[in-house]
Amino acid sequence: MKIEEARQRIESAIAQYGQHAAAAIDLVINEVRSDQGAGAANELIDEFDLELLYNIPPLESDFSNS
Image (cartoon, rainbow, N blue to C red; front, side, top):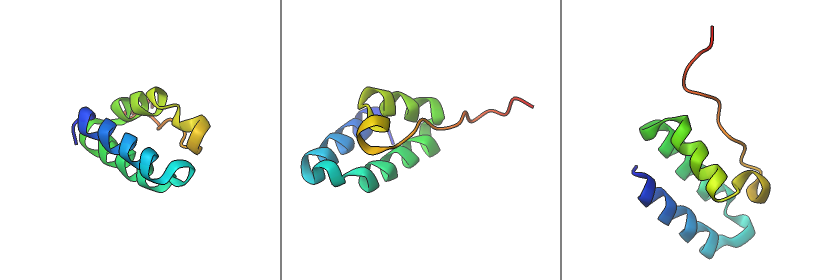
Protein backbone atom coordinates (compact mmCIF):
# COMPACT_ATOMS: atom_id res chain seq x y z
CA MET A 1 0.00 0.00 0.00
CA LYS A 2 1.29 3.44 -0.88
CA ILE A 3 1.64 6.04 1.86
CA GLU A 4 -0.93 8.39 0.30
CA GLU A 5 -3.53 5.61 0.15
CA ALA A 6 -2.75 4.73 3.77
CA ARG A 7 -3.25 8.37 4.81
CA GLN A 8 -6.64 8.43 3.10
CA ARG A 9 -7.70 5.16 4.74
CA ILE A 10 -6.62 6.38 8.19
CA GLU A 11 -8.45 9.69 7.72
CA SER A 12 -11.54 7.80 6.55
CA ALA A 13 -11.43 5.43 9.54
CA ILE A 14 -11.11 8.36 11.94
CA ALA A 15 -14.03 10.16 10.28
CA GLN A 16 -16.19 7.03 10.21
CA TYR A 17 -15.39 5.41 13.57
CA GLY A 18 -14.00 8.28 15.68
CA GLN A 19 -12.55 7.02 18.95
CA HIS A 20 -13.31 3.43 17.89
CA ALA A 21 -11.10 3.51 14.80
CA ALA A 22 -8.09 1.74 16.34
CA ALA A 23 -8.79 -1.69 14.83
CA ALA A 24 -9.23 -0.31 11.31
CA ILE A 25 -6.15 1.90 11.64
CA ASP A 26 -4.09 -1.01 12.97
CA LEU A 27 -4.90 -3.00 9.84
CA VAL A 28 -3.70 -0.11 7.66
CA ILE A 29 -0.49 0.27 9.71
CA ASN A 30 0.25 -3.46 9.41
CA GLU A 31 -0.28 -3.37 5.65
CA VAL A 32 2.03 -0.35 5.32
CA ARG A 33 4.68 -2.12 7.40
CA SER A 34 4.40 -5.19 5.19
CA ASP A 35 4.68 -3.19 1.96
CA GLN A 36 6.90 -0.22 2.92
CA GLY A 37 8.63 -1.22 6.17
CA ALA A 38 8.41 -0.15 9.81
CA GLY A 39 9.87 3.31 9.10
CA ALA A 40 6.98 4.25 6.82
CA ALA A 41 4.45 2.89 9.30
CA ASN A 42 6.06 4.84 12.12
CA GLU A 43 5.86 8.05 10.06
CA LEU A 44 2.09 7.57 9.84
CA ILE A 45 1.86 6.78 13.55
CA ASP A 46 3.69 10.05 14.30
CA GLU A 47 1.82 12.08 11.68
CA PHE A 48 -1.62 11.15 13.05
CA ASP A 49 -0.46 10.94 16.71
CA LEU A 50 -1.85 7.40 16.80
CA GLU A 51 0.06 6.38 19.91
CA LEU A 52 -1.65 9.05 21.99
CA LEU A 53 -5.09 8.92 20.37
CA TYR A 54 -5.48 5.17 19.74
CA ASN A 55 -2.72 3.52 21.81
CA ILE A 56 -0.94 2.33 18.64
CA PRO A 57 2.79 2.42 19.48
CA PRO A 58 5.62 2.85 16.98
CA LEU A 59 6.81 -0.41 15.45
CA GLU A 60 10.14 -2.07 16.03
CA SER A 61 12.70 -1.60 13.29
CA ASP A 62 12.71 -4.09 10.42
CA PHE A 63 16.44 -4.56 10.98
CA SER A 64 18.12 -6.51 13.76
CA ASN A 65 20.92 -4.92 15.77
CA SER A 66 22.56 -8.23 16.69
